[in-house]
Length: 222
Image 1 (cartoon, rainbow, N blue to C red):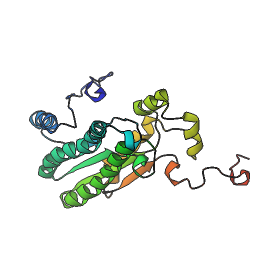
Image 2 (cartoon, helix red, strand yellow):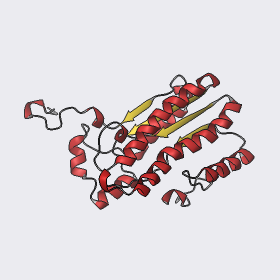
Image 3 (tube, rainbow, N blue to C red):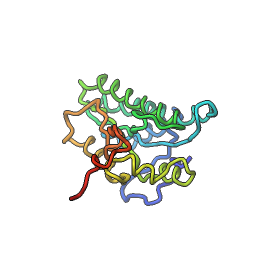
């Protein structure tokens, strides 16, 4: 799986631990290493993800399990282990990467959409479980972003760039840095009173009500 690859551009001073987030034993080993070496977890970002596209009636059940295993179970496993350490610290911030796919219907993406909706719900549950301990749990729901998953969809034809541009009021895809800045904000003390929330970063995609607007409703620069 791509998430198990070594980083292409390692950051000096960072320590990397390989982990299959869908496997509890692998996650436990990774967090044991963190406990023994760093001794604490201040921020967890659940960002591992894969995409598989098929209509529901022909979707291989094994693919369903695989997608939910990485996205939803992975978020559960990593969050559970991080929370055990954060509770002892009485501090910490968890940010999970959800998606507008968990809010709107995208044909052929049943397991992905279901997993992302589950992540948003799990975020709310965890937030109220640990709020009194000074731990915050939030999610970010990006729209279409020029990530490896979207590039994969553009290559296999399951995503149309022209079609997406028509669906997004801002008329473009996000770049990863625009999503990362929201994650950094939620991890910081500037978001110290925010918990249990999902911040949508989608250029207006999920709120667009009229997709084919008449000419007189189309904004003009002049």
